[in-house]
Length: 518
Image (cartoon, rainbow, N blue to C red; front, side, top):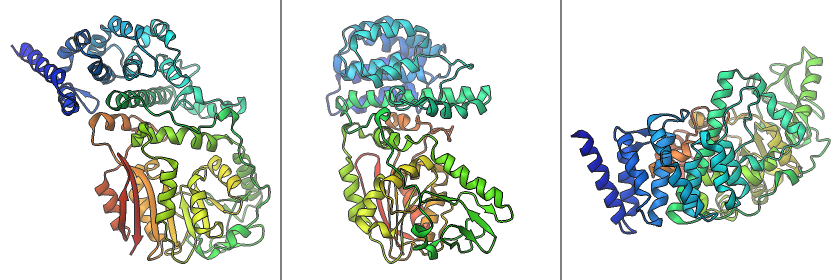
């Protein structure tokens, strides 16, 4: 009796979904999904309902098939990393139907994108699936994501990292690939497996989010202006940059080790209070780790080490700006339709940043795309860039040779209280979500009264499926998945840091915020 009731309930939901008009379609779909799946977890009805969903594809109109295919993919994915769970196996029973649909599919259409997402869950049928999609002549990104999702882990030769948003964009040199694999060799088999699974989830999240947008709104906008990383050129960094770039802001700096003032002589950056020196090369001051003056040879090694690190993965900053960041805006901000453009972001920063006296800090500056906007607004002579990524800072220094770059953490900003005239933090707060409140508190500490804090980050989408795809993005340093924010908590953290929010805007899950230090 309970089984028939379950089937009747799902049948009713499918009927309501089938009969829903355009204004009610999404609501009825969410009711259907919610009965079987909740934030990546299966409900008790999921297994019994799966055959009905598969059979429904034979009668559904083309405008409904894509929705149901995405639901079937979500049900199969709920048992990942297992690919032979009860529900995943039930979903796979419809493989012949899915491949028949692929046979009549057209490249780039919403139904096709939904099918690619669903088929990505059946690695045991890899050869059959790849043969079935061959006629579509898929774009390299779609093809390489599908190919990678259908692979199984080889512990002796794991291909980790350098995969997102698609393996096809990562055209590394032999040296860069060797460097990228160095960290893989330090991992245990269990860690390799976890990273492999997270890489797979991240690719599935991108494929699923793209398909879900397409089914709801139409084919995504093709992002323009991306540079092929294989053709990218890292801007030339000035070979010799002494302490003069930093000396003009000397009063603002403090020693990360003891909090004392830093002394900028022509060739050395040191803290008298704790007898610590900090390496400096090519206009990049590394305050992430100092060297005791009691070991001069260690100091020389530290500078040599900094120079060596500057040469590692030099194109990473180019990858970030040309490929990774636009893709991240699509997955985190839902920007598949191009609702937010670079011009929109530039205009917000230029309009809202309002420094009082003192230097202006671009924290978590990355490769300098918005450091350039800030520089054009306030002047390079007022600006300091801060980031922990040396490849990023290398690109930034090539773009802005008059802007000093500091390697340091946004969670322990190496400047004194009330020393900054303004702070910008663009598209970065979500990179350290567990410590976002601390990062905001640090901004409040260094910001002078009346100075502005401009930031852009992302909120969790109110749609549970879109939210699931957002959370499916795994940073290498965060095995729990991506953690975004709720607007109320951002406002609460800003208030606790002594700031008053003056503006909140941005479409979808984008959050453009300006706050002023009280």
